[in-house]
Image 1 (cartoon, rainbow, N blue to C red):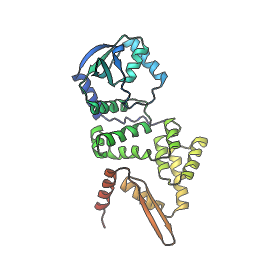
Image 2 (cartoon, one colour):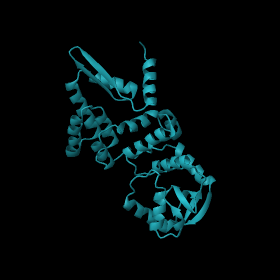
Image 3 (cartoon, rainbow, N blue to C red):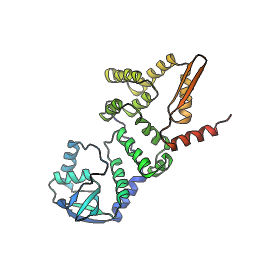
Length: 272
């Protein structure tokens, strides 16, 4: 199963909670509430909606949704899943905090809302992190500070997005974990990646077992495996060394301009 470690930390949860508490809470008829087609959202599992709707029927909506005024309607900023469950539960009105958000503020709040979902897989978490960086100009360190997690955690999630699409689909489906993904990132050859993925699927290799098998294979292929591992640990990114006829290349991957600057800063601090 996918690791359920909270990707949000404490920082953004507090921000969203503060927004809810400081806004004006109203009971708004469901037919006046509309979704925002431009907001980011992931697949919402029908069974989880039914469970939430059942809870709402019994206890009511415990956490108001967040909306903003849009012409004569109220557009959902955060809480579409809760809203859909309220409709499923048969509610005629939904408790909502009305906020005066512009488009960027609404998008940021929607991303925060997505991060709060317990069933996000690593690809979805990485995609949200990427949007914070691309849409709002956060550096990895700034995002990590805002969320309340280590920068390396942000970087590790973002690295997963560089995997082939078919591997990412397996992660989304819960057939591979984030730990499996990290091991696969150390393999530059997609054919080799497929071989190891098949072993995970067919033999049920754990993350530790996969790490050992990958390491053994890389030691056979390259005498520089240990050097690659050391550089990966120091630089916090994928490193590949090729060597042939007494010459070779050290390939250091980066995933943004900010990530490149981070790596250069680490290299500049190393003793000569």
